[in-house]
Length: 241
Image (tube, rainbow, N blue to C red; front, side, top):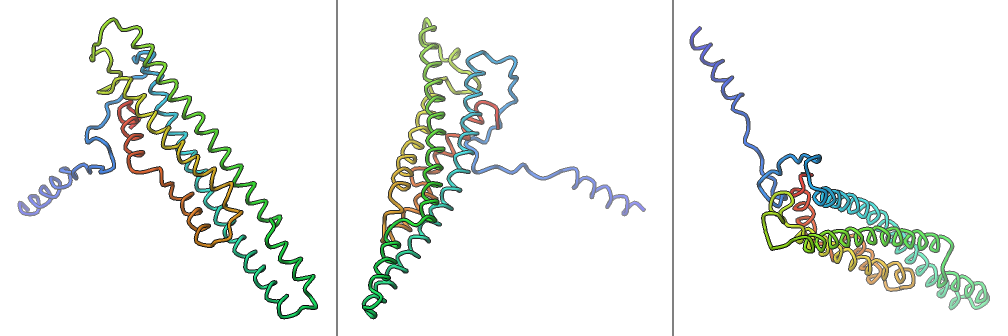
């Protein structure tokens, strides 16, 4: 009985010990953000915290549009390749059968031109780009908002006091502005790339170039791990994480 009791007891002890807390390598800091009492925050801190949440939401919406746009670019590439193959086949037919040269020439013209299907895909991609442009404009407004808050704080401060400049844990408002400005610049560069892709991909005929542009839309070369670090750091600092 004593051995059985001892075994059960040891089993309970092992169970109660639990498992070590896993560290998230993607987190910018091993320190968990303390819970934030929104009601006790200063007006400036509330605005900054709302900006951080807005940044998160805008980036999520951007990623949805990026995925949608990538799907459309692939459709455009496939449609273009099909048209090119049809055009090549028509030209071969014209060379082999001069009697149908007029019909072959008509097919080639349709292939070189923009079919209704391809035009529809191009319109979808343009709409996606315009939606992403509106998101970037909102990102710019967030950055402008933070810059205004920072300038107002500088104006109201009689002296440089790092203690009064900290809104949450370690960041002064200037750092929030700098992070927001860096994120906004990343998305601005990416937006310019997407504009170039949306305006040119349907007018290309080289397979490798079209595939490269489609891949560039999907993988967003102006985005890197730093974007994720900046966003997560801002969310952790403001208590959203």
